[in-house]
Length: 233
Image 1 (spheres, rainbow, N blue to C red):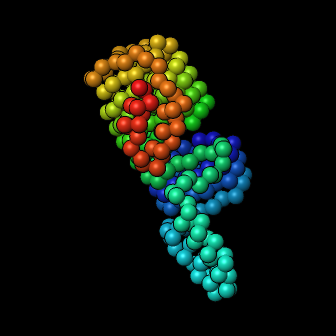
Image 2 (image 1 turned 90 degrees about the vertical axis):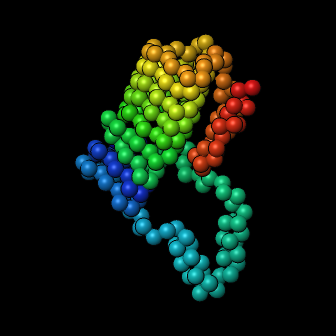
């Protein structure tokens, strides 16, 4: 695995090969990189102590220093956070906890989000939802336990086996078979293999912009299936 930026590895991640990072490397607890790693930036190996413990220790130290205003500011920001995402960088690689990465097999513990103009080689086993950004190319198959959304101009050199609905963007090419519940496919997209839709095929254009706005929520575990269907109306 190669990265020109920063890499964040969650707890219990396993990488079958070697990891090379030009930026910083942040490693969680019980991470296994079987062929070693190389990082040109800072290397941070996180402790398994929960984040809330660090916050408590930090606030306790501020209290001892008599910095009550700083404590009030931090507590106010935490209270007003509204569970919003913390921005990391515009370009980054994030690997969640309990993930398994390899050239032939990659497994996640929840959902899978692949950004725009990415090139990925692996066969993905995902128990949740999958979202592939526009202009990306995947050399492998995807097996998903829920809905899958494919952006515009995406090529997938493999099969799609889905226990949910499939939404294809414009000018998508699937060089393999498709199996799912319902398949939404515009006329500009094509499937080279067999197509099995247990609840039917809908030949219509998907409102990609509205769907992307709603699919951002699925990273936090929100159920957006009903909202996706509303975007198709």
